[in-house]
Image (tube, rainbow, N blue to C red):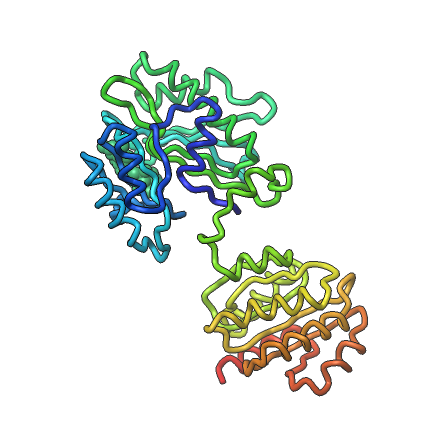
Length: 378
Ligand code: GDP
Ligand code: MN
């Protein structure tokens, strides 16, 4: 998953014809002042962090003058929003908002189709609208072969009670948003709010695009937009070694080969009363360096009280995993107890390598999980 910043998302929208406010990104307060002067004084200063609800958190402020823009930028640039330090602000020409609309395209897995959603209750969190006024969300599934049809955007325009004079603008924006979604291989392309201005223009004030990692190889330009400042060093490291890693809140670090086995391992850890600290799939045929990196990532989480390594050797060779494990142990000098279960290709060789490595060995997965849970409890 690659989340793009507001300024990046709006750029991609603008390239496809969606109107956005004039604006530029600043990393220093002085720079925000210069941009405000260029834009004519009245601007909105917006924190660029990859979380929603920046407005409510105080990360979006209106400035009436370049001096005020500088002051607010300094203030916002020193903020931390939901754990993320603000490193950049977007300085946009302020909009004269008459009404806020929600418009998005996402992937409806159950329907196996893209879904366009809109609401006249824009600006606020859409999950909240879904809870309180579900009838205010208008939905149109898009046939991927047919694309978004004009009658569908008219249905939406009608559903959100848009005045006739805005229908043409709205149709063009909806079509461009759908195009953005398809062309970037996004799983979400969202404009919230899409506003109607005092002079009856529709403008995308906020933008959010989430891209599918599995399609990024087709979009080197988009892959470059990833903001490494916004992800944890562990995630960056995992991506570098081709490991699938998701951090969780528990205390048993898991290293497994294969996504299905990794999920099964997490389930059985929970079954025996433990809680997994992560999902980590080292993939098929992992070499020693990958195993070393995986263990380094797991152990960098200070909550981890025990490690469970569950390898089903097929393409992956157990001796290779053992070698990576030993290298990591040497490098990391960790005191956390480790339970290892190696089954399959070259398992004897793997076990022999680990014989004097002071690890807890296990034969069955149930045995391994129970030992890991016990070890984590001290
Ligand atoms: P979010 O809170 O992270 O979703 O950030 P948004 O970009 O959606 O901004 C939150 C709210 O700030 C919007 O719904 C608007 O009400 C307000 N806002 C954003 N830009 C402007 C602007 O240019 N002018 C005015 N008046 N309000 C704005
Ligand atoms: Mn928003």
